[in-house]
Image 1 (cartoon, rainbow, N blue to C red):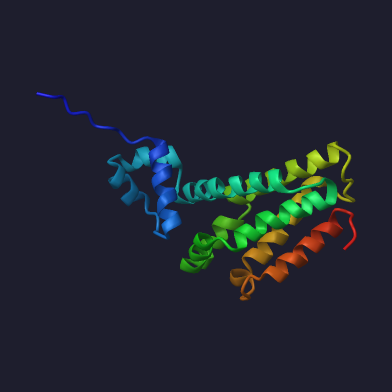
Image 2 (image 1 turned 30 degrees about the horizontal axis):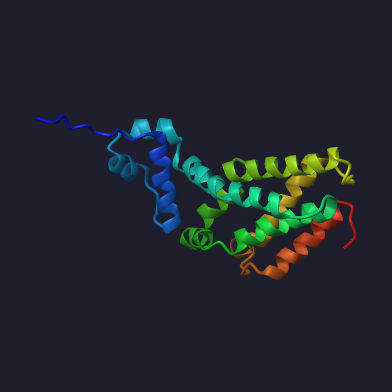
Amino acid sequence: MAEQTTTRATPADAFKRARRMWLKGERIHLASLSDELNIGRATLFRWVGNKDLLIGEVLWSLYEPVRLQALSSTPGQGVDFVVGVYRQINSTILHFEPLRRFINQDPEYALRILTSSQSTLHSRTVEANTRTLRDQVASGYIDPPMNIESLSYFMVRLAESCLYSDIIGGREPRDEELEDACTAVRILLGGKA
C-alpha cells in the first residue's frame, strides 16, 4: 500500500493565494483563507499579521516590479530621470485595472490601505523614493532645495492626490493631473517647469 503524503501550506502559499484573489477582485477574508489552506486562523495570523498587512504586502509585491522597471528603463540622470521614473510608475498605477476595482469596491478601506501613514505600501513607497533621491544627490545629479525625506514624502502624497482623486475629491483620476504632478515634482527638485 502506497503511503499518502499531504503537502502542508506555507506562508508563501497564503501570500500567493491572497495575491491571486486580490488580482481577480475577490475579497480577502482571513477565516476563509485559513479554511482553504487547511490551517488554523492563529497560524495564518502568525504568518501574515492581519488583513491590512497582508493586502499591503500584496500591493507592494505589485508596486516594486513597476518601480524597478521604471528605474531600469528611464534614460538620463538628475531631475529628468527622477521625473521620468515618477511619471512611469504613477502612470502604470493610474491605469492598473485591479487597483481601480479595489478602490471601487470599498473606497474608504482602499484609501486607508493605500495612503495611511501606517500603511505598508505608503511607508515603503516613501522609503524607495527617498533611496532614488539619495542616489541622485550622492552622484551629484540633483541638489534639491529641501530635505530629501520631506521631498520624498511630498512627492508620494502628490502622486496619491492624483491617483486617488476619485476617493479624496470626487474627481476621476486623469493623465493630465499626473502631468501637472510631474511638473510640480520638477519644481520641487529645483528644475524649471
